[in-house]
Image (cartoon, rainbow, N blue to C red):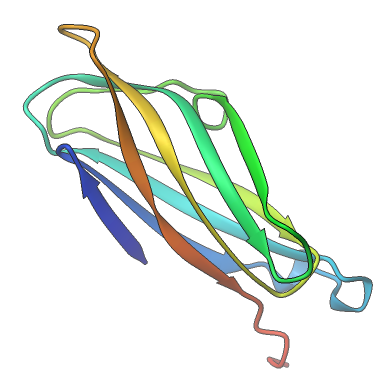
Amino acid sequence: MVSAVTEGVQVSVDVTYQAEFSSPHQHHYVFTYKVTIENKSTQTIQLLRRKWEIFDAAESHKIIEGDGVVGQQPVLEPGESHSYVSGCNLKSGLGKMHGVYFMERIHNGKSFEVKVPEFQMIANIFHN
């Protein structure tokens, strides 16, 4: 698991290779990742948008942007957390991701960015 704290918001990511959904002989590797966002600040915040950079050893890198996370734009009071699971398909068994969440402080509408730490995606293709 990797974690980073930006402006009182901690983001932790735990990644898992999904061997049962992958087909290495067809260059298809599936990974899931669980993200936990913890509001350690003293202000209520809302996650509005996300931007991911995905690097695959078999391809050039991709940038993915969109509203919220898995269809939600969670509001977090001080001390609250939000977790979700998402996934990524790679053409190789080796890659990495990192990104940013675009957030807003509810009390004054001020926008700020929260770093999503880089995490590795490594397929365990030698496990039987």
